[in-house]
Amino acid sequence: MESELVSIVIPCYNQAQYLEQTVQSALASDYRPLEILIVNDGSKDNSLALAQKLSAENELIRVIDQKNSGVASARNKGISEAKGKYILPLDGDDLISENYISEAIQVVKTNPEVKVVYCQAVKFDEQRQKPWKLKPFSRNQLAKDNMIFVAALFRKMDWEEVGGFSEDMKMGREDWEFWIKMLKNGGEVVQLPFVGFFYRLTPGSKRKKTGTNQKKRERIAYLNAKHGDFFERELKGPLRFQRTWSKPYNTLLRLLGKL
Image (cartoon, rainbow, N blue to C red; front, side, top):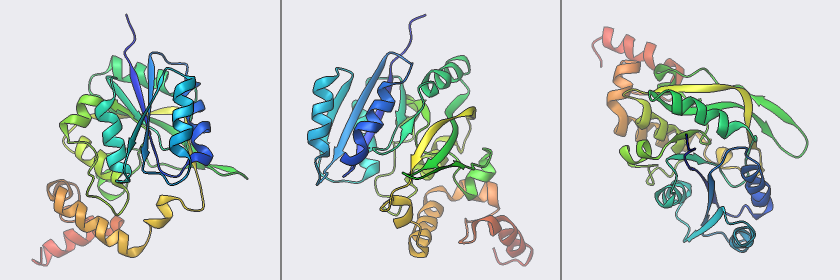
């Protein structure tokens, strides 16, 4: 049976320092057929020139250039132009193992109920690496926190069905919201039993910038506005600032007749 094309979509904003290493890790994948789309999101460094050089050197690589519009927009642009049935987003400074895609494809091709396949992961910088302790997937757990990093494999048709990544979610963790809308009404999730994803810790990483209390409040308000039905079902009411306390707090308010 002929293998189906996988599209790796790499949004890049001022990540020239790491981009080639990321692309090389994608090219080292033992899965074929493969295409790599680098989406330059209005970088101010030499990311675009580097991406074009890499594309000229390898026919598997395509480059898309857009004005700075944010990572959700860059992912959507790349996925919209991807030719593959399956998509793997990979940020411009992260890495994957050579067997990650081939193992993930085996799962989705043999089980149509599976919507998302990811793996175990590590966080790393120049000095060290440490395991990324991800909680097991459940919809109830997904209502309180995200345990699926963005570099997971899914079908392009499922991305289309939910309208892609939400480009108006500017306060971070847009991948969490994407998984909520893709999975809240069904679909299985599989975590592969090996480390296949390497998340780079950098001084200016987006997770740090979006980790403030203000951003968290904006994020929770956004999620409640868009997915109130999901939180009602899983948490008996809205997601709260102290997320793990959402369900007991909502339950108490109901008992007191205040919700």
